Image (cartoon, rainbow, N blue to C red; front, side):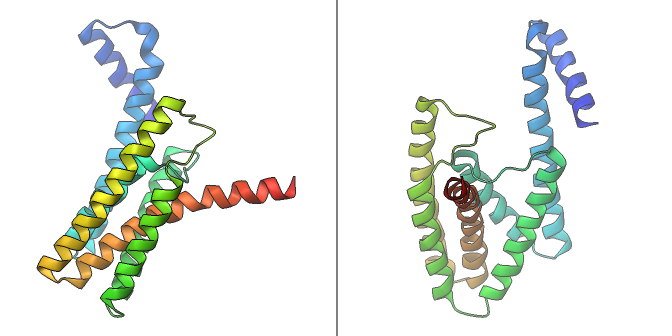
Amino acid sequence: MLNNIATKISSIIIQKCRLSSDLIKIYTYGCELLISTGLGMMSVFLISCLLGRPLSGIIFLIVFVSLRLYCGGLHASTYLRCFILSNLVFLSVYGLSWGLTYVSWLLSVLLLLISFIVIFAFTPIRNVNHPLSDERYIRNKRISRVLVFTEMIVILAIYTIIRNIYFLSIASTSMFAVSFMMLIPKICQARRVRYE
């Protein structure tokens, strides 16, 4: 169904903009990504609204999506699985952050620092299904390192100003989710190499 919608949109774009029809597969793939990402983001925001915490969805999307774009990590094999995984990750982040609010702000800061170190050290994760050129790899590494450093500083600065433990915990666990999803392929790859 998603492919049919994306193909129709691509055909309209090619027709209206007078582009080469040889590129329809590329436009279709781009439309599929755009639609599935948009639906995933809307779903996360809707869930956060239903939970009575729309700000948690916004914070998650800002931190998680911006970093995942350049860091890579675990990817689902289909758009449906990606949609489900994104929502499950958000619900996990939401639950973990809720628990952290009752523990200590220091634990959230520690989680933030650990996530920063993991992301800074391993970014970007190479995906065999979506290989990056060496130039793109270096570019993504630079961007993701600057982005994770900037996000960490901004998160800590905002927490220092507003002193809201829930903000700190949702932002920290969102960054932790990125680092965790980066480590999964690394661990799987190491285990494969060990057993081969």
